[in-house]
Image 1 (cartoon, helix red, strand yellow):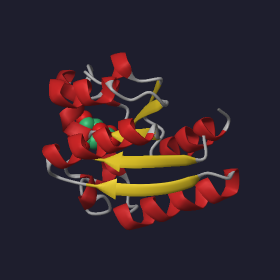
Image 2 (cartoon, rainbow, N blue to C red):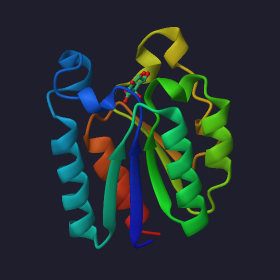
Image 3 (tube, rainbow, N blue to C red):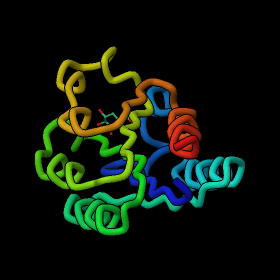
Image 4 (cartoon, rainbow, N blue to C red):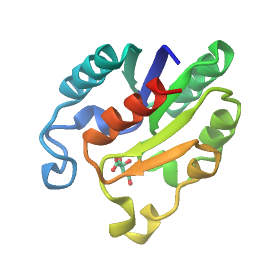
Length: 142
Ligand code: DQA
């Protein structure tokens, strides 16, 4: 795969100031730069987007489905209950890697299940920002 969309959902635009003990001090802008840089290292063009609007995220997933693009997705809180996002993810034909910055299984019970995992190629949870780098590197091997 030579192109990857990194899609971040609700509240992730507040990385850096949002609960830094859980999510770290890296801002979303810095995360985006890290993802683009990782892509350069492995020969993949990476585009990073973030939205607090679920409909926008669904539209981006439709775009990825139509263009057969690989997706790295952190759908944040939506991961735990949005069947609409799951249905959008089901339409992807290229790999989908679900990423969570925090170790969701060691947190509140409502975070233990993801409606996305069942339609994802892989799920990475608890590696912090490194999880995005691992996801991009994995996609580059395909
Ligand atoms: C998250 C975990 C979710 O439970 C939470 O709602 C988020 C971020 C993570 O990256 O660890 O917003 O997806």
